[in-house]
Length: 470
Ligand SMILES: Nc1ncnc2c1ncn2[C@@H]1O[C@H](COP(=O)(O)OP(=O)(O)OP(=O)(O)O)[C@@H](O)[C@H]1O
Image (cartoon, rainbow, N blue to C red; front, side, top):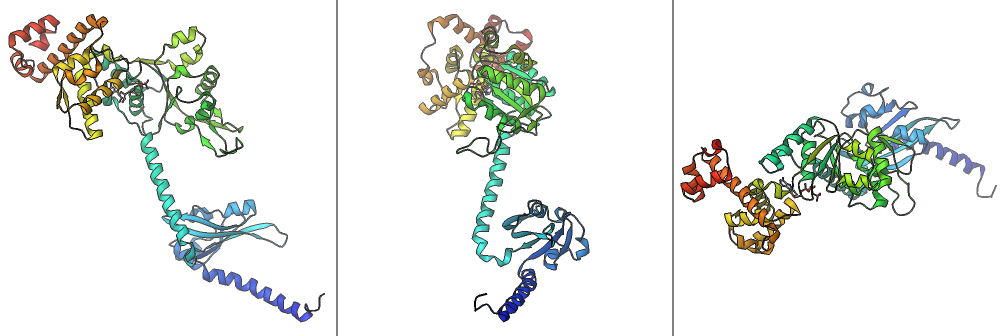
């Protein structure tokens, strides 16, 4: 024993230690906003008056013996007991409030965990206020981002978003409406820009799954090496290196809702097998873990390539094809539904005006005939681009053929198609005028700015129905 540690000193320090032990609890109790203990089963064993007041309770008997989470939903007292490790400083949400808390396990003489004690430090920790303000701001941002994400996953389209009232479009809408009432897989066929994504989203919106997510994934846009993670997600720490975080896969994100697999023909063969298995079993393994994830997902697939050809070439599995192709809807290219051209132009010009703030335009008859004669390999997307370009280049409120000069003359090989296009256009515009005027030819002729005789002749030449013309 060194000479400055005397018997008297030891007695003194022991007494101080005992005082410290006794007073520490009392001090914390008075300094803190609240204090609580739970027994080894997580039931409230003791709670001070301040905590009771914070919980809106008047009497400890209303709290004692109850599971701690019943009163404090975000309590981690059980976690502290399970891990036998204190959580010295934490921010716990309680209703709209954030509180700074400390939690410690309690031990018996043998060192066994017999309960836990927790303190709410909030008001006395004024110096933590900037941190709490930051935390609150981050939480508000997170809530906003979550709302935005939920919004973006809500179906953007209904069947009304698919513009077109001609027979081909009506058939698309009829089939899509039926698909909305079933839960079977759907295969959408159609060239690029024919509205496959609109129709997929509209089917989802018309289905009982509408309130749950609609998640899209484009096979052509995801590199092959990343597809599996994109589909099934990654367990935390599955990969060493920079990205150790867990990531949810699209299947999990779409759980309960609809997964839209765009450009399914671009899915590599190895992934086709895996996809088929998930579609059949509705379960998969998270990458980097053995845990099996169960999901309930409806699949709508789309392709702009001929899957029959890919199957013949051994590049697409026929079993997957049959699994996806329960209901099939073919979306007609724009050149095969020219009767929808006026309605499409109106709707697209309206969208352009709303999005850009440019004045609302119309398409004059000359321009309409020109547009009807184009081939439109990019379909409605290409038409929308052409209309926007004309709006930018011209000040005319009624766009004329000259405003679409950048499209060039219709190809010579399209001569016959040009005649067909003109007839389709005439049918559309005359049909619309007759409809506007309750089928009365003289009034329709006045609206179209042509003589009655010319309109009668045109109606007869087009073989339009007597009912529409009468
Ligand atoms: N019938 C339609 N009515 C209104 N807009 C349409 C219609 N069809 C397509 N569009 C518009 O054209 C663009 C392309 O449509 P969408 O993305 O649905 O086509 P897609 O067939 O999925 O094309 P891709 O295969 O290239 O992805 C979108 O801006 C969409 O709003």
